[in-house]
Every structure is written in structure tokens, then in C-alpha cells.
Image (tube, rainbow, N blue to C red):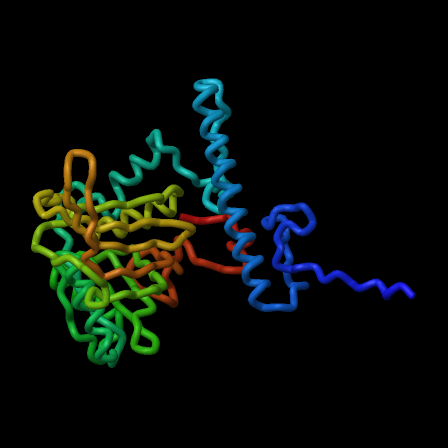
Length: 323
């Protein structure tokens, strides 16, 4: 009698058992053996990477052969480059109306170097000891800034005191769980006032291979503020600095707006040669997000708001930004 047919066991680790390359096996979960399953996945990733690299080289050679007739390089779709157009978007060519407004706004005297910024920094009542480390770093970031203990005074009294002392700005810090989470900035004596949510705080002491700050006046970069509101916020932040940078210090403070988050960085740059420059972070590092902008100094009851973030009314799309 003929022996019964034996089932031939298929080697699950053989990537080409079906005559297909390993990178086409998209779901090896049917393989029971864990080690073989890992080997198949490793081979899958390796062959997929090699196929991708080969396709890139092929496209590059074809583009070199075609020369000027080569098709344009495709750009990936991102939230930034598919941003919805705002009605108040400002063109790069310049707008006479905006330039006229900026010549007469509350920050014009500072940008024209007719007034030197002088900042008063204070906190919420009874701050934690950890907040003082951030205050120290903030005073290193903002030239000509001075810390005053809050005590039991309310903000309106502090505004009056700071105005009498000829301060140009008042900065009030708040905190949660011993970490700074809010920053109120007011232009004195007549406003405006803005409140920013603060997140992702990293103190200077926790930055590896950091540089040391010098007493030189830093350069200032205000990047990607593209709407009317963005221009106003950018000028507000720019008014915290004197606009006579000392280039020999090689220090730069950056306010980079991306998706309405303002990333604050402090760097030193050095030139390695005529073509390359190297950056060294000085610190601190944190992120700001505008919550409201109010005309005049701080007044929550009767103050007139220029803009306030209302999540359910304004955040109707992931691709809509306001700065």
C-alpha cells in the first residue's frame, strides 16, 4: 500500500518561497516562530531600503541625462505648504498701508532708536524657588531687564509703578507645578498688552555644550510672521530689544513662528571658513503661543481686545493659522 502523502513544511523564513522578494511580504504575522518572524522583517526592511535607494539613484541619473528638460522635483505635502490663505496675509513686496501704520504705532520709537527698551520682570504672588532660575535665564536673554519682587501688589499698581520708573515694558511670569507656563507682556505706559502661553521650557543649565553669554547687544531674527496680526506680534516682541546690535558679539536671538507656535532660541555663531558657520546654543529655550492681545495696559474688565484665541471659533481647520 502506498504511504500516505506527507505535508511538506514550508520554510517561513524563506523570503522568496513564492518567487516574490522579501519586501513584498507586508504582513509576516502568520509566522509562528518569533525569531524567523524577526528575520523576515529585517530582510523586508533591508530590501525595501535598497529598493528605495535604487529608485532615487535612477531618478537622479535620469534628471542628469535630461538636463533642463527634467521634470521639476516633487515637494512633499505638509501642513505648512498647504496652509489656508488668510485674508490679512502680507506680501513680501511691502504694503504702503502697513508701513504707514508701523511708522505711527506704539513701538515706532524703539525701532527708530529714539527710545531704549527697559524691562521690568516680576512674577505671580508667592512664586516657587524654581521659577527664579527661569527669571535669571530670561534676564540674560533680554538686555536691560530688571527683576522686582511682586509682593502683594496687583498688576495695575505694578503698571503704575513701572511707568513712573520709566520702564518701557512689564513682563509678568506665571507658573504651574514649579514650571513657567505663562507670560504677560505690556508696553508702557499706554499698551498694548499680550498674554502668551509658555511651554517646553529648557533652562540654560540643562543645555549640553552650551555657550557663554557676553554683554554684547544681540542681533534679532523675527521669522515667518506673515499676517497683519503676526506683524504686530513680531514688532511687539522686537520692541523688547534695542535695535543697534553689536556684531562682534556674534550673538543672535530668534523668534521663529511656525503654526502659531513661537520658538525662542538664543545662539552664538562662529565662522569656520568663508562658506560655513557653526551654531552654539546659549539658552534658555522655550515656546510661546499667543492667547490674547489687548489695547492699553492690563485691564480684564473694561479693556478692549484686539484679538483673543477662541478655540471653537478660530481653530476650524488644522491648516488655518493666525500669525
